[in-house]
Amino acid sequence: MSWPINVTIKEVGPRDGLQNEKKLIPTKVKTDWINQLSQSGLRHIEITSFVHPKWVPALADAKDVVKSIQRKEGVVYTALVPNQKGLEAAIETNVDEIAVFMSATETHNKKNVNKSIDETLPVLRQTAEEAVKANIPVRAYVSTAFFCPYEGRTNSENVRRISESLLEIGAYELSIGDTVGTASPMQVEDTLNHLLKGIPANKLAMHFHDTRGTALSNTLKALEMGIQTFDSSCGGLGGCPYAPGASGNTATEDLLYMLHQMGIKTGVSEEKMVENAMFMENHIGKPLPSKALQAHKGKKAILAKNGENR
Amino acid sequence: MSWPINVTIKEVGPRDGLQNEKKLIPTKVKTDWINQLSQSGLRHIEITSFVHPKWVPALADAKDVVKSIQRKEGVVYTALVPNQKGLEAAIETNVDEIAVFMSATETHNKKNVNKSIDETLPVLRQTAEEAVKANIPVRAYVSTAFFCPYEGRTNSENVRRISESLLEIGAYELSIGDTVGTASPMQVEDTLNHLLKGIPANKLAMHFHDTRGTALSNTLKALEMGIQTFDSSCGGLGGCPYAPGASGNTATEDLLYMLHQMGIKTGVSEEKMVENAMFMENHIGKPLPSKALQAHKGKKAILAKNGENR
Image 1 (tube, each protein chain N blue to C red):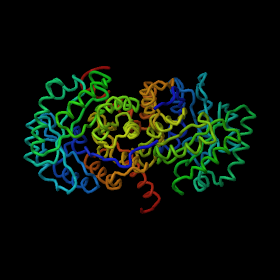
Image 2: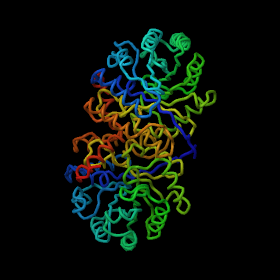
Image 3: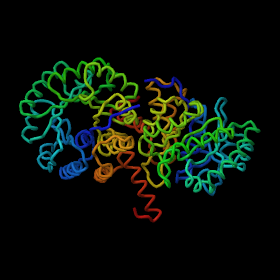
Image 4: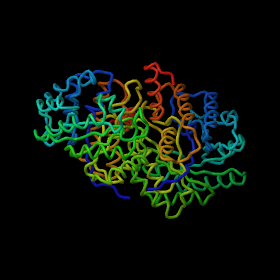
């Protein structure tokens, strides 16, 4: 069995992770955290969202966050934008890249952006074209690509159709999202088999949520099928706000652990990522779902108990 | 890619899960739990250990547990035994099967049973021979098969040598243990490549711990290599006693979720297993690591918040 030699990790914790947190995180803490994340070897960080604060109050300080961080050379800082208004904020604050989004299922898209899929595409096309004119690369999320909380199992052909539309309007990469975290390796295989018919693997990223614990097994399947880019969230942030133990995105530390143990290079420091997760865990005030983080804390506790100091 | 149509799950929560718990669980709670586990479709449950209570105080009530449970027809009830003395207790209490154990690394074996590997084998041989004479099937654990906390990465050839010895003394199945929970899919592939040279896949079970979140990706790799038997622990019990959030064995519910989503039959009810995990979580008094359990609780919390009642 073979898998890629190198993998690119796109950290989405400051946006996808924090957007669902009940506890309001001060802007200063967010920017300190993003600055730390920038020092861990990551080359891509999605730092906030220019969605209307009415919908995502946790990220109402989007502009302040983008303006306050220390940009590290070589790191691409991305903001999520829903439309041209979001793009204007992105241009004003000088982000490096925008990410647009659309669901692969009608009901989820309607609930999320109050438009049908066919109504959403022209909005994204206009946004993407303006962005490209302004020399801002566009990434595109395909949400509910595996399962929709309203419609059930997503039709893989719909995922392919929407993916191709998003590439056609100018996205350089698609992030295929298991929004609810229900996918299994078999579904990943099926969906990727459909997508890879018409789309090269290097234009696809996988965006798994670990709600049922399958994020890393889904990652393994995607690696086996040639995917080399994965979204993840430091600490595994992004869980359901009503369930303290529930998982969010793939935890970046867990992903790093598995990849590095398999000899796959990421350029990102596991040690620093665990520190970054611990930093945010202390601010959020509850254990984050990342297993690598909890294992690290367990190891420290044992060493402390044994009077060892390393 | 293909994987097996059927998988056998061996539930080890009452033994491997509870043996590390700091909180003492009353015998009545254990037996109620085992009785519930028996009703979930499981065919194999490891219910306790006849190791000296000095070493595993949490299971000091081993005989009482075995005597108090309601045996369900078709379910094999197993006890862990270290030697002939343990076997005597197993015979006295009429367990259906015994499991013996040995480490693949010298230092871990020495720390665990105070004997070298070469000194342990004759003890296990005698125990296994007596068990077979008494019509009690013998399962054998190979611990630290991937990594040893004292010696580091385990040599796969040593794992093969010990595995073949354990089959030769009469074990019908080997459970290959990632005791510390550090294995990655690449290590699983490497170790299984060595083992499958001389041992048929149907004599091998995998026993993963989810300490770093890799248990299900390791399971996927093992499935792809033809393994059909997996040990797991209801609720993901068995974590480090000094780290509240740290993971133990593969959580049975998480394993069931992935397998069933992949169309693999287990005969075990996911719904009942989540209820069983919730039962033990309430007694232990802290969230268990199982993701499927926490996702289930999150879903219930959302429905309750929305005033829905299903």
